[in-house]
Image (cartoon, rainbow, N blue to C red; front, side, top):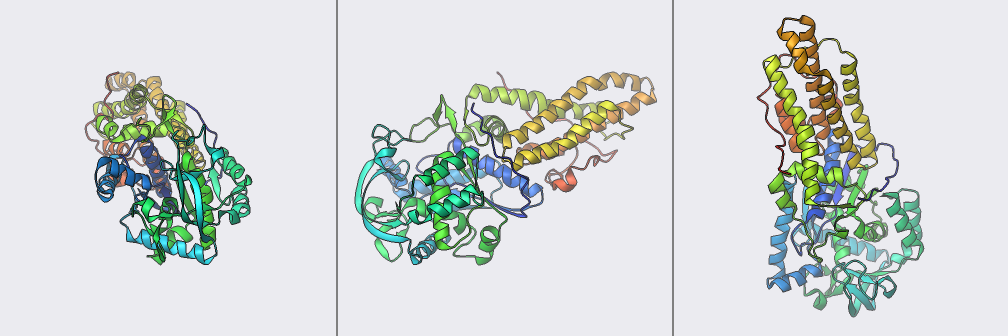
Length: 534
């Protein structure tokens, strides 16, 4: 597993966040790489909602690509039929992965998207940045990208290892070459922030080599009539990347809803794109240049995650080494998958996936640590306190140490989230779970209970205090887990006799120590994560 150091940042105080994922092609079914990005973005959105911000989370599907047309031809079906079938599978990931999306945009059927793409095209054209000329280039359909001969590896696409097509046609071009200096300055000063630093440096290096104008259309013939038509020129179809990138502003209403567009794009404190490292160039160079041309605000942050690999190879539909996230959810549960991807995959680094490690992580962290802690605490309250929250007495040194750790975990989580290090944030919660289990062993409530059973008032007070400290620690753990494992957070709240509303209570009020009311009834203990056979 490779780790990548993230930049140090102060917590962002924006009151309005607009968070997006990239929109995947629908030439095949979703794979675990899509799940990783969706879960990362969803976790960030949930976290900022809990910390008091207004958040809009958007995903969708990129449906106007030539590779979708070719996939339909291979399957012997109409392009629209294949796109519809696969788009529905991506849409269904919301429920499977526990996502709290506010919008899901489909580029081939959402009229608001077409209107916005046409509007942006015309804005760039009005600024003198679109022109038409004959072109000959090397095109990889897998990447939907033209390559120069220098960029090829042994004559093949550096990503897909396939020989690119030679394309000759008259295309429209965007004057990317006009924007190199402006983009370099914006990125270097972090006015357009790219995380991690290594990706920022790659983009700056690419810009310094000189930016070239790029083709933003293809002929109707080569596009097989699929895609958004070039405004005022029915002979052409807009290049898929010029089309797809615009979803980030067409979703909130660039051409159709001025108020929403102002609220969540132009007026948002943070405009965050969560993307994979293979599409950094499009998002950090092409897209900002298009926005500059049209006189529109840029994204504020581009968070670039790494790849999940199998035997060192990137998971890729074109390579056929795909892991189905839905199958993992059906076998192990939504939060088991969320936990693994958030804990074991460094947010901006790569990680190798194996089912053996997945099961090992589930058993070690979720079954043996988290699930065991919650169940044993509730069972002890059931056994020693008649299933009622006890009244605590004065805290001893062990109590105080656990309380301090539980309360201090918030700052650790906040710092990690400010640096977009989701893996470090959830690791901090895991460490609190481990500390709570150690506290149980050190205090040994079952031994204290023997003294209480013999009538010792001091032992009873110690027992009540111990169990209250554990219950409150479990409550805080549930709140800390809410952005990462929302179903588990709700299940923990229910084990403590609380409802779903309490599980999603804003952190400003939820994380104050001592909110469980003495005498409140708890339900019978239920297992959170039954152990899996090794």
